[in-house]
Image 1: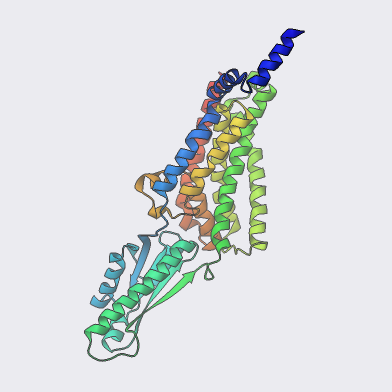
Image 2: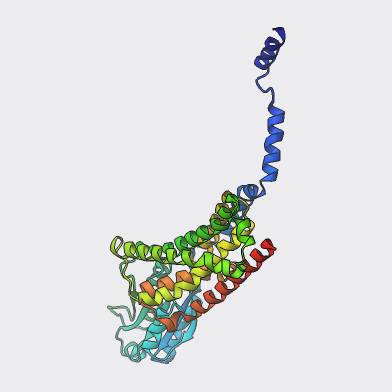
Length: 385
């Protein structure tokens, strides 16, 4: 009867009794759960470096196309001001207004500058010379910077010309006429929601297939599949196709609420959008299968699936412009499938882009889907073998 009382007295005297065994047990548990350790320690570090090095909210070197119908010394001097501002990067000279609009609709440039043929004549006659600045409003941060800088350039050029003439003018000699296309009211919903749908599509498709093989493994039915004559590629496609229909259904629901709940217009063709989305869905479903061949538990599969969200949000151009990122992060952006889906969504939904404008994005996603399904099938065959 005395011994239990002694233990109780010791436990009351030392409240940390048994601490070391518990610490040792938890340390062993953490060291064995490497996936949880990775997401706890490594992921926050990656986020910090990504935000610190890749994200630059100062918009610079905006891709710009120029239609210089004047082709005079005065028009070239005006264009030099855009180049030297470092806010604009002239990537193409076009020879018609239709070609200028097509470059913006296709998403190859964000700003179009049109200098009319009578630009120099108005200047030499002492009249106000105007030029047109077309801004892609589907990216609100770029649109705001382009408008402010183009107006500042016109004002600076006007002041220098006013100082060089002796006559006193009542009006500025040069005036910029900016025009925001596709989103003239700069509604944030028009900019954010199409990109958000792309990110949600990625998360949904990866998560659906990432857990499917793991679920089979946890229930013990995966070994039964190994014993059947089903080939790995047949199993992969059989797993992917039903979820592809689910993804399409979810996409239609999201587009419905985007249009009717948030008032975001769809200017392009919905069948074209469905066609271009197909390779993205296959790519991400294949990636989900690849994740499922590596993850051993449902928890690991969900962690790995959510781990793909962070690069997609920061590096895909969803919020921050890709053009302002360092080269290494622009390269990383180019291998993220969501980057191309966001370009497709904003192109079709906001700018009314056509197939000729977005076929490159569709071709890249098709190549990614073939690669991803093939790698997943090979890895699954290796596991099965």
